[in-house]
Length: 367
Image 1 (spheres, rainbow, N blue to C red):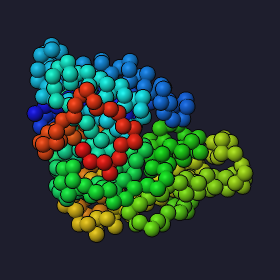
Image 2: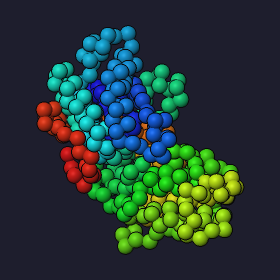
Image 3: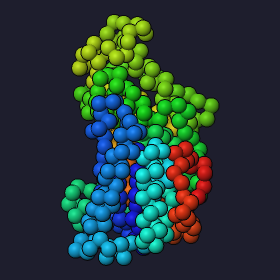
Image 4: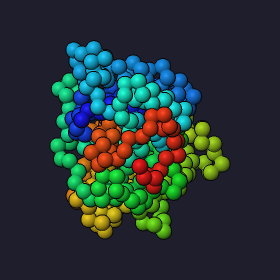
């Protein structure tokens, strides 16, 4: 079964074609991140406008890449169903993808599957093979398919969640962040230090030149040991930065980037990254010992962080399974893979005339 996936939850417009839930035939992503850099974060109106401009070319390119030598019309004959991100995400961005998928499902007479974007991050790890052109472009896929039960740490820009999967679409959310998601904390700390957006890659790059033990930072302790909190850690970095330049809490944060030396920035970045990563691994390690999963998966944008991968692989057993770095950030391959497994598990497709975007969609809500 061959699925076309469509993803527009935030600032990436993506389309991908996946066969049988594990073979990636095409993967096209058009990011508007450069348009948001000047603002230090995603501007919803700009993101939605960008989706509107590029979604049709992105989908067409995905079909051309997957079925080379065929016309677009002939390529559509090879598509068995469409999967689209329903939520969560930015409403304006989601609307572009959902409305496009609705229209295509009706006009092309294809079943349509609604996908939870956060849930779908885990399904990136089920992709184990790819068409040769994708492999030539540096895509490296895991050969080890996760086995149930799966303990998944899903860490993206707006979400930090621990989820225990008993089977496909049979799971329970056991822990989540009480305030900032870890990806948001990376962005905010990067801004404090005067590092560019997005914060994750910028912090990781700066941390390579810093000492991760130079600044002692706190880890949150919560009633539910599986829950997370990063707001206090972010504030602790702010206070440490103010102290580093000889100022108190009243010193404006927007003046810190010019007051801090490069060495101070590097040390603060390394200390923050190490503490944030340890916080994630502490919760994952505790859950792994208590729940004894067959597989551990770490997925989502922050899963591309190499410091996290090294520490998690050294500490956890079984060793975690990660998506390729290209499939950690938002993409449509994971959406298509999720749609395939919905079909395989006999989850009914949605009515294309009634599906609506749901920016607040939670993994607590089942299909």
